[in-house]
Image 1 (cartoon, protein in one colour):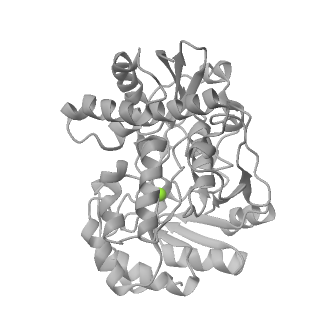
Image 2 (tube, protein in one colour):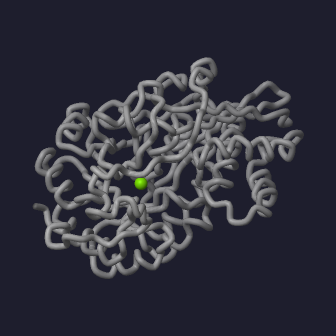
Length: 407
Ligand SMILES: [Mg+2]
């Protein structure tokens, strides 16, 4: 079998307004679909072969840029046997090496192609991708939803979802206390503290200690991803469960967090961490350190979500999958079939390959326009009073007397 070509399908996901950062407080509320999905793009790729088998994949590390990157990589892959996935991954890595440390952007382009190669291999052999990864550990995958208010948290609970994640740095301890009171002890709660602005390690350590009484599923991205040593500082003073890793790609990007045991949960993004080839290696590295995997899913679309289901079905340390069910009604119309959650879980697909396709006509109805986020709003309170226009990347907390308390 030989690869004959690669097509890309870029779409704007959501209503046409500017996307604000989740830390503006709209994360998981009912206004999510109006304000948070505006400039999010999804990029799907289809790899065709001379035997008529077509593989599908998705790239999530800045989709508008990745479309060009995938087209650049295509001539290197045409004529190759798509079943030799590892060799082709190495070939792509060498091809983009001259651009420097490309991070999730370079890895994102490779991810969509790699995912499509696994899809082709599964279809050629007549088995689901989870079977290629060692077989099933589980038939269904537990999911968590997003909620920032007691109302949206209770809405998840009513639908049978047993875990939630809130976000934002404006007043995290008070927010978690309020959510815990609303949903009770039976629901797991996580919080994502990603910026802007990011917390300093000293502040993040205090927040983590203050969150300990709430039985957190995890505290995610408490500090900026560049500050790996800051995680050690938090670790040394707090027993809270830490999660990170969505902004790194490949085994090389996730290596320090795992090998230095700086997190309890590793969160590579299924659309930009380097493909199923890298995800399974990251999972194995984490397993050796008793670290669980919970793939990031906030910015990616429904094809990469399928890839995550196959992966989580097969790895022993698969913990839970992030799932944004309420972001945009078009999510369900983008793929066939669309997975439907039941009792807080998604069933693992059993069709050959990934078991999913996109509706090309629907995708074509949503052309891409731009693909960046706008800052949080001043009203969100993420920045200290009077400092919003500075737009700093990292900021220390003020009003410390109230910030680290539940009330
Ligand atoms: Mg996150």
